[in-house]
Length: 168
Image (cartoon, rainbow, N blue to C red; front, side, top):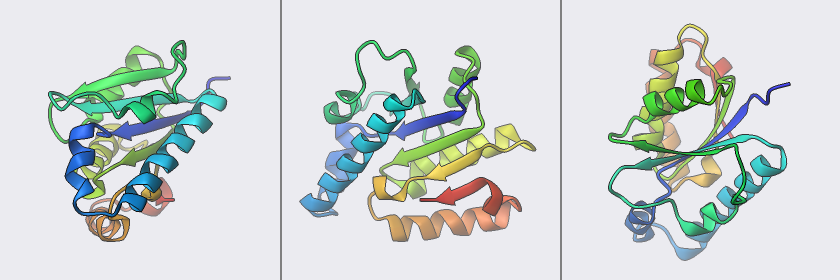
């Protein structure tokens, strides 16, 4: 049986981590990276797909996160995007590698920017059969403020929000 869960890491590049370092304390930054490493380890243990989305020209994903993925792990895919919305590249990767689009567990630094744009794009491109999207707020900076912006957009745009998008 094909696994139907995908862990999606969005923009955990050093450039973006340095940008938020001035707005959060070191403990919060440590927690974000810790929660993300735990998600990666869990995904590897359960043989889930890991989709690592990087914004082109901003460097690789933070080494502590990449070190959690075994070198020979066949279900990890680095995806390069050119704009905030990486949905097209994610869905292309899913098609190319025959990856299920049923469930996406999404981690990202800025919920109201690239995570929002990507989730929005995935939902629009998969309509009317939206996947389940789990936003892992513990893997984000400023989750309360960001979740409010995120939710306010989706509650007006998608009637199926409560069934398809949840914050964990």
